[in-house]
Amino acid sequence: MLQRLAPLLVATALLAGGCAAETVPDSEKIFIETTSSPLGPSKGDGKPKAKAEKPRENKGRRVKAIRSGISFRAPAGFTRLTKGAVSFAADSPRGRELAERTGFTPEQVRAMFESTDVFLLGFSGALTVGPIDNDGALPTEAYLRAELGEMEGTIEPSENVKTPLGNGRLFRVSFEFGGAQQSGTILYVLSGSTVVEISAGGPDADATLNAVIPTLKRA
Image 1 (cartoon, rainbow, N blue to C red):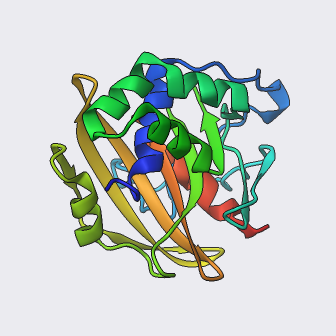
Image 2: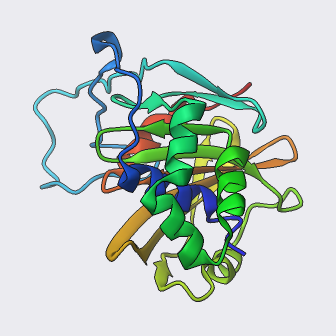
């Protein structure tokens, strides 16, 4: 249970646990345009601008997810967590709560953290990347609903998203955790026969994935 939602739950625990990450150099703090994105246009008044502006490229540090077989550029303001920070998150109150609420033992939660390829933490969100075992097929809504189990949550209908790695499948999920409503966006892509889950948690989850998707490459 919860294998496919594990990275998103981990991201939630990381964010709620207040884990510290390395300082981001000013040169890597860039503005990400969100008026148009792989996930669709953002809300606006629909009026064209006087002059079209070219979206700024995400020039953040390239991150390799070795087990997943992919690489991508970190969104602005996001830094990769060290193993020590991830271990701290597993032992944090939110990590212990995650174990209690999902029926896992603390050891299983630690294994969940350690099995994820990449953890990145930003000012208002978290990003995790890791391979999942799903026989080389992109997960469906039915699979995710089964993963939620008894946890109260909603899953919006899936969206097909074009990425540099090929077609992906995207889900937006919300669930109650830690006494508050949490939300996240999950993108599934294939790297060869490996199913890779890219999960963004927090209020800016869509914007986080918007920055990552165009930079995806095989590692």
